[in-house]
Length: 185
Image 1: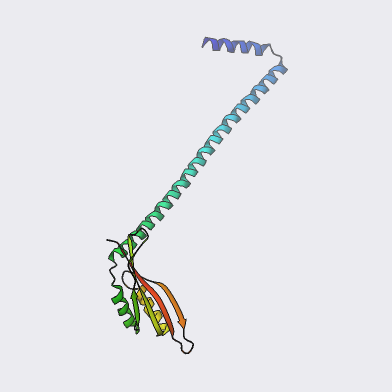
Image 2: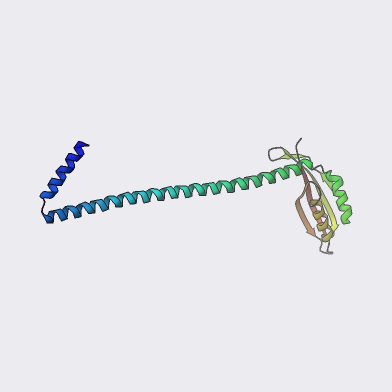
């Protein structure tokens, strides 16, 4: 503390020895240095605050992205579970199911060929399919039949459809493959 007082006394005596013009110059220079130091301090605080705001905004943006991803993951998980539940509950006897739907649509299936069960994906899903051939069938009846097949219980889909129109009438020949899916047990 004594050293500081000694330095202040030396500075005061040095300042008092200066002329009025030199004192003004020293005070103006000291004021300019003080303003510059204040500017640097305020500028650094401003930059620091801006960087904190930017980092906070970046973290908030990442948090919003995580929340969005979590919501979409939850929706995807629910959709997957719903499909798995459908596949687990699917116990459609495809041949009798198709005959029933064809009878309701007013059709007869002259040719129905079952195919071997096939594991799809990772082998956990079993596909059972039947190839159907309709000769001389009305397009509206075929449409009604295929729509009712896909709207039934379980997971039943029309995998392929090939149509060949008859030139003499409005009927056609249709080849289609209908498949049902279930989880391997």
